[in-house]
Each structure stands twice: as C-alpha cells, then as structure tokens.
Image (cartoon, rainbow, N blue to C red; front, side):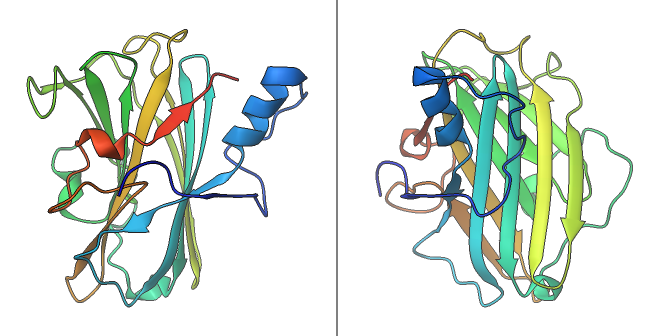
Length: 211
C-alpha cells in the first residue's frame, strides 16, 4: 500500500489548538495538521479489540506534537502500567506508539512511546543501518488518558538538535498493539508488501509542513 491514508476532519482538538490563525499557506498548514490520520492494520494482523487507530500530528519549527487515539475494547488491551518516565529499549515488544522522521537524505530518527510513559529515540544512517541512541533528543512530555472505549496519548518532543527545523519532514506513524491474550497487531499510515516493516520507505507517507 502506497501513499497516505484519507484524512478526516477532526471531531475534537488535535495535539495543540493554535492561539491565533494565520492566512494563506499558514492557514492551510494548520488545518492540514489538525486532521486525524487513520492508521491501517497490516494485512496479516488481526485485532478483535481495536476498532480504529488514528494520529494527529503537528509541527512547529523543530518541535513535534503527536496525539495517538485508539478506539475499541480498551480493557482487552495489554497496556504497560504508568511508571517513571525514562529511556528504555525494546518498547516495541509490547504496546508501543512510534514515529519515524526524515528530513531529506537517508538518515532518519525513530521515536518510541509506551503507555507506561517510557520512551526511546534512535538515529539511523540509512534503512536499518547505523543505529545509535539519539542522545541529542531529550525527554518528551507524555500524557496518557484511558477509559473503557478510548486510549489517548499526547506527546510533545523537541527535535531541534536532531533535525533541521527549516527542512521538509516526512513522517512514518505507526503502532504495535498487544491484546491481553498476547496477540499483536501492527498499524501504520501505509505498509510495504511483505511483513510489517515500519522502517521501509513506503511507511514515510506523511509530509508535515511547519506551522
């Protein structure tokens, strides 16, 4: 599957509502950012608990704000309990929300956010090559809210030491969702052929303008 999924008009506020709207290109960019991007389940995945996964994304310079929304039988999901916010590896082995960000060239950043509020940030020199911990990316702000039918995670992270704020960014937005029975499903804006692979170029399906 190639390209971005269709956009929906928001039915509530995105990650941050602008305090003052501009005109022309700025106005268009703000409206574009405050739309919900639906994530698509991978063709080989099955989920009986999740009805929908969507993400709001907003960029201001080199600051990125994301809001992940999961709708369904939230009580049937395996969500790591809240703990001290800190870096941790292999968050993707359980429920985890991810963003891959590229600003031209082959290099890109991978950001992982867990419902526990643990997080991770990595740099790659190319497709799955040259991986290292991105120490230049500081701790994000993560806020998690849940009820019986909805999981809502809001994330703000500063990327000015990792990515140029004046360049075009392409994003891959994705999620690994684990159910209480141990089954996992894989969600993304777009999927390449074959098994789930969030690092693949086809997954960088969103061009996010600066607002």
